[in-house]
Amino acid sequence: MRSPRLTHVDEPKAALMADGRRHWCDVRHHHAVSFRNRLRQTLPTARSQCDPDLIRSSLSDAFPHLPQRNGGPDDREPDPDTAFRSFYLESTRQPAIYLNLFFGLLLLAIVPIRSLCFGLPVFPTLSAALLEWGVMVPACFATLYLRASTWPTAVVMRGTSALIALNFTALFFDLLIWQQNGVPMPYEYTALYFVGLLSVDGLPARYTLALCGLFLGLNVTAVQMIHGWTPAAGFELYFDIVAVCIALLNSLMLRNEAMVAWTLKTRLNTMAFRDALTGLGNWYHLDDRVGPLFQRAHRERRPVSVALVDVDRFKGLNDSHGHPAGDAALQQLGRALQHVAVGPIDIAARIGGDEFILVWFDIDRARCEQLCRELQLAIADAGIRNTASDTGVLTTSIGAVTGVPAQRDDFEHFRRCADAELYKVKNNRKVESLRSASI
Image (cartoon, rainbow, N blue to C red; front, side, top):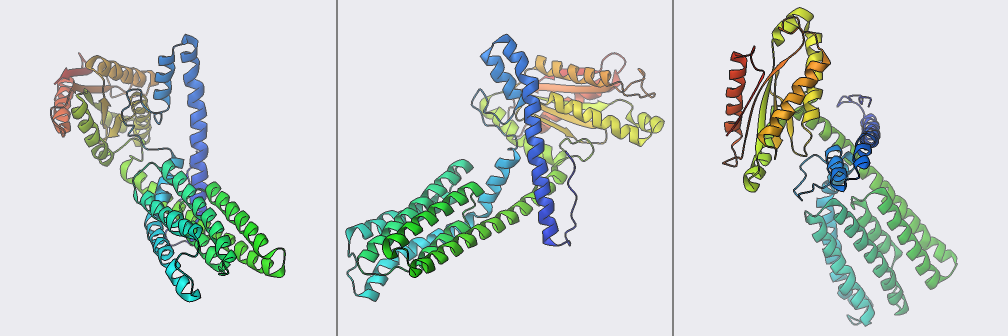
């Protein structure tokens, strides 16, 4: 995936928005290609053994965003589409709440106000009362509640779309009822209502287009039933078309603003929580992720394994082959670490110049040792030259511990124990390169 061009903050907003759109397309393309490649690599072996559990397990390893077999939460970051939808809904939450509250109160007051203006009873027809106070007002407050809730993004989007569609349909019948009772309903009111609801809906484009089509269809039907095909009808439809254009433009501008803000936020998070050289997490990433992992392990009484990885004679590698060679070696080591940290909430991070840490959730000591051996074997197979090493290639020393956390914040204890095991390996490097212990 090509890296997006960094845009200076003083450049025009148009350039920043264009850069955000290019970055968004790159992310989506990379996500699709990665999904296809992992699918091709994962399914053949599982299919050949005709084992449903193996197929499920293979898919869970290859696609961490799938629900886990044990029903536990998946703490990996969501894919870009889901992340942007959530951010888009969150950015429009407050104005949507205020707007639905305003329209709900306005609909509560419009019946007595209209009765006073036209000298009509408060409820000239039972149908109008049911539509305005029984359908439209509850729909506005239901939308307000839905946007203020913490429900999943898909539920909020579909629920909001359904409630807006219900409001438009009720408004259409309300318009016909009042016209039949001799009370003109200005089409500007319906256009304002439509523009207000869709301008801050925070919905995907397909939802907005569907609601625009519903609004136009209902209003064209209402105009034809009331006026027929007359110049007055054309004048009223003019306001409908203008309202649709304004709503679409507002929705597009709001989405572009959200895209720019989300792109900048994603880049800042990447710079703050990722090591630029290896692509692994840094100390901030470790501190952010390890707390919830240990809390869950303590709550569910699951084992956690912590391994400290140190590159042997790394200073000699830099002195003998140069810093570019040292950087390339760290990059290969980072890829190997990512390969063994395959669990949904496993952590691989760089915590020093040539020091790394691995945190595995729900694996025993034997599996921890196996993964550490696989890591060392992958590094040895890479054949990275290091003349300062006794073997002539890059090697690593690993100290690991496994146990069930006795406290919710037991990570520091695990790290100190792993560091003690690593220290023993360093003092006896010619005999062993890996030590593990249970705590």
